[in-house]
Amino acid sequence: MKSITLGQYYSVDSPIHRLDPRVKIVLAILYIVIVFLSANILSMALLLGSAFLLIALAHIPVKLVMKSVKPIVFIIAFTAIINIFWTSGEGDPLIDIGFAQIYKEGIVNAIFLVIRIFVLIIGSSILLTYTTTPISLTDGIERLLSPLKKIGLPVHDFAMIMTIALRFIPTLMEEADKIMSAQKARGADFTNGSLIQRAKALIPILIPLFSSSIRHALDLATAMECRCYRGGEGRTRMKILKCGTADIVAVVLVVAFGAAVVCLNVFFA
Image 1 (cartoon, rainbow, N blue to C red):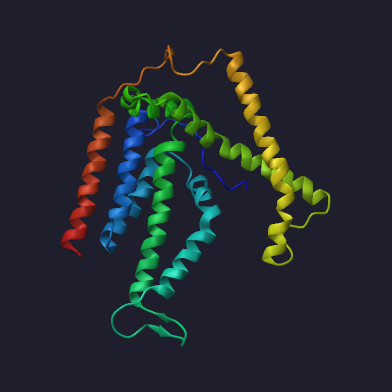
Image 2 (image 1 turned 120 degrees about the horizontal axis):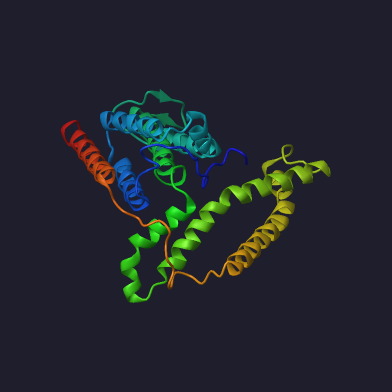
């Protein structure tokens, strides 16, 4: 539970922290598209290098970034194994164990998948949650979706819900960890037994966790009402979002990076 860092903001001064939140949201979307466009070894190597460059530019400790990958290591490994054994290729298999064959294409696909997921988590985390405060993220989402207000969509409410949900992930994980510790002190066992038995042992955690989440939601609603929060209508902002030279340069660099990845895919297919 303590390894989950999704939704946490890391306060430090860096070039990425100073970017406009609207630009960071757009850059995160572009980066995700580029991740899925990569299709060969050279583009994957360039993608992996860009991930470590983002870590350096954001001034975020590598240990903290790796913590965001740790909770899904099992999912990544399981998916990679499935790709290795289920991907068929041309020619003779590298390993033939009777009921399953391992081809070169399967190993390559598994490596590409691991790199994609790794870079995807790092890129999205650094460009959004690690370097953007929840308030700035809400303002950025609202400003980007502001044209939808003309057709009557509650853009401000939608942006606020998304940001609160993202921000409450670490809080709920911490609460779940406390509940599990309390259950262990009462003799509960979450580590021994079969998979079904361990899954059943987690059921007593769900009820107090749901109760705690509802209590947190009610406390937040009361706090917002006490501060006279009435939604986005007539709301002013202390900090006005403005795109500067650094934002334009960042967009140009990411677009150029995407073009380089496409060129590598075309000329080195």
